[in-house]
Image (tube, rainbow, N blue to C red; front, side, top):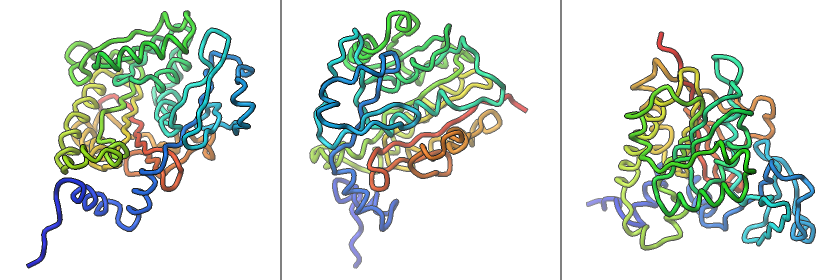
Length: 320
């Protein structure tokens, strides 16, 4: 009698993702277990001369990723931001995350030119790295709302915004603590652009935490996908017609990525369209990393050295 494959715990996790990625899984798994690669992204509100002695001593490579000026750090490399200009000059992050935020502020709507008074919503904003990119893209009269339900994470978010944004910009940034899935009960057609960086499985973290891995089951992704869809559907209702939203996760599960977007397309397909990520970055195609999926872009560490990050760019269209 054949042995049934494990459905839960570490063995179930291995079986599940091996079935999704096939022969690629061993390399992807090894990459997920490797030290995280990060960059020091330059704060656009700080002059380019605020580089700090640590940068000079380490001879860090300066380059552009997703249209952002970054210094590439080696895995585990310490970096001290010793800017003396009043604002912190660099934010340390996985550069894959920058692509989701840059896609939101770069994508063009079929409705025409951008409004300098755009309202932008970061629905699940902590820790704040993506919020900084959104704030840097605000027009002269634009406003940004950064939402985070967790009190602890919201406090960290506030601290990041205060450390990196000049007072004039900070005065146009609001921090809230609402349930994003219920936002649509109170507002509709209110924002020009929305980022939904949804809570997800975070397989890289799971692989590093044996206690959590023991509790894994396929239901984890299924349950998270329910929450993720609720956030995405709420954002769609809150988004203005002609507005742009980006749905993003750091999961490698298709149930939490393309499948969530596919559900929105099935239920509200007459009023939403996918904008190919290659079109969003058409002016700098060489800058785009990762691989196209059915509804978005996946950046995986086995091929890029960064991530994982999935993101999909969507426009809310007028009903026919």
